[in-house]
Image (cartoon, rainbow over the protein chains, first blue to last red):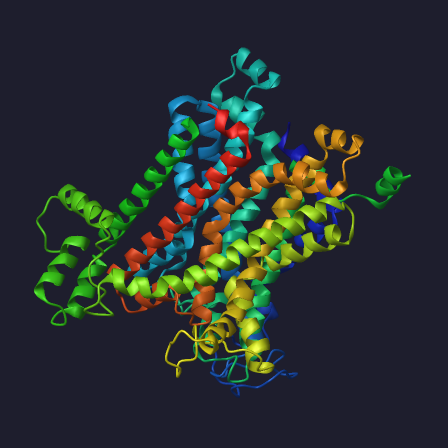
Length: 295
Length: 327
């Protein structure tokens, strides 16, 4: 299978599936905002110069914080960090999952036993408490540190899934034929084994990205990230620390949560759609088919 | 039997990994953070507990690291976690034992409840394929699963506690009341548990529904289910005893796997509601730089998850003869 045919296949699938289409649309919009935040912000997100605690108004669409910052501008400015975390952690986790999962399945024997054991152990140790412990010692986690911690704790689920699928493909005739032709292992893995697994790999990327977004915002919320950065999680941290809900600025705490959920849902919708490619039985039953079955 | 031995072996290896992480993480950090902690508590602690902490975190000791490691494992296995620095002179164990019942009550009950309800709803949704439940639930819970757990808690507080003023939202019981074993106090506890329980339930139930639905769809298409229909068995019997029982198996494994996520969410829910459980205590320990308490809590949470996974493995073996015979 050629790479371009895979991309075309994925695109034609996205075009037909409503969930995938919605996810792609939201993701693209957020990417645009993350790339050019200055184009969308009406005010300086860091400036504490506006009237504090203003409600919804024309000048401040989502009101202001109790420090006198514009909530909407902060929301826009915070998009970049969540997107970056999602993409970078999703990408690195996927690479690690593919590396471990496929090596285990392809090599077999003691290496498989060892890698599978490692995967299972990382999988069962509760990640969030572990992240808390690691970042607690470091006081404040910078962007790359957060990436590191999230990747180290987030690769195992994908590795396990990919290993299972690679195992089921390993003894198919076309792979045996490639080996019989005398192709190198690298060739067999990259040209014959990985392409049919694309939809599962993409689903894993999306799952890891979703995990990263939620874990990062949680870390920021409890103040273990870097509270001086512009992000949705830090907005929630400051809102919570200034009792935004009791003090009558609910939007300050409401808006970033909705933003996180918007990005999260886009990833989750796409993920679900790719699960449906991997398992056709899950695809929604069309009304026509239902009628055909019933009659 | 062989299956059981393998699962026990895995439990022990995972436990060892968690204890080892606990031992090495503070030692791997740049500029051993425990030294700063020691400086802060110097003069507040007696020399014996200071020394215990020095050994536990590897400060000022010229001991071989392997000797310290073996000692650490020994202490951990005996449940000896030292003194809590923020609750001096109470031992870590006694501090934790006060928080544990709250978490077991709140998180334990809501997790089991969520699993049972979610599994049942998922099975019914798949059974009536294309019905209202089947078409509405998946998209709704995909979106819900994308919200941060703690944010759902914040919104529940804002809506039900602050705006509508229906329920309390801080702590496990009313602070001004002295805990007694009376009906009114128990009602007070339940009243305080409603919002956190609701938050955990809402955020965790979607996972159970979706996985059960997806398993069930695969199982319903199997020949033996068609056979059961052809025999004219009552649909209810086919749903629960034929299809449901088999679809439940992967969900049990999933239960074990996602328990870590539920616990993570519960930590934040406890934090948002100031609920006096283990998760809230963990974050307080972080804030107070009470590292002995923090490490013991991490280990406790890990052990709880590992034991739950082990129990679900046993349940799988009881429900599925194939697991027992597999080599």
